[in-house]
Image: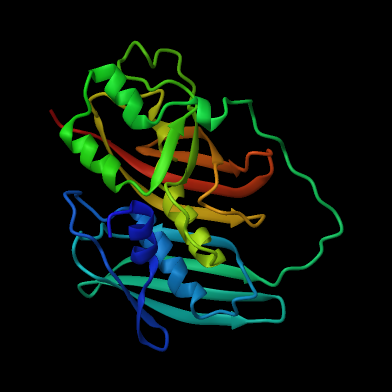
Length: 290
């Protein structure tokens, strides 16, 4: 299996080992810890597998408790908190080598008519994704060639990511930079027609660039890193149906960074400016020792 999007769908296809217990793969990679979006996406799959398929998820709230170990399977234990007439609630605990590394609470809502509707428009207009270079193209243009490590990452990347603003490489580039970032994203190939797969794939993607907004005033996103960072918690609200293999705009901002923690908010829109998903995350930032 060489297609990165197919590998993502396979990664989200958990093995059921008991009524409310699932096991997920954790690929052996050179990362220090398992990617948080992977754990969140798999946990949401586990929750969704125990609910009525007619009720899509409308929100999730999660905490990253310990770093996951790459290459070691993760067991997801689902607690069926409530099955009501309109809402279903699930709590998921992710366990690796006998230790809890992550927990998630997800709520599912039976579709209904609300009688009213409104939303804020995107904060700014950005170029269409087709007019923007890929990250690999920007890196290659800046460096003259794509480093081997980035080339391997690009081949494994399940999402096409295109920054609405030019990449920042030096301290000069970030002078006066606001804590805001916007990217277009979509899966690199079709993900099938299961709505839960699209929801969990977007959950995976939502953790990929959100903390960029915190870093922008501190250091160049694509230069030498001066800080180690880790996701602490993650919350999402799903407003409208969507497909993660169609272009969506991820508009991100950081209202505050203080005490070694940075808060980031994201709004995900479709190409027509309809708000699909709202995201909030806090990350831990610690200066790397020279």
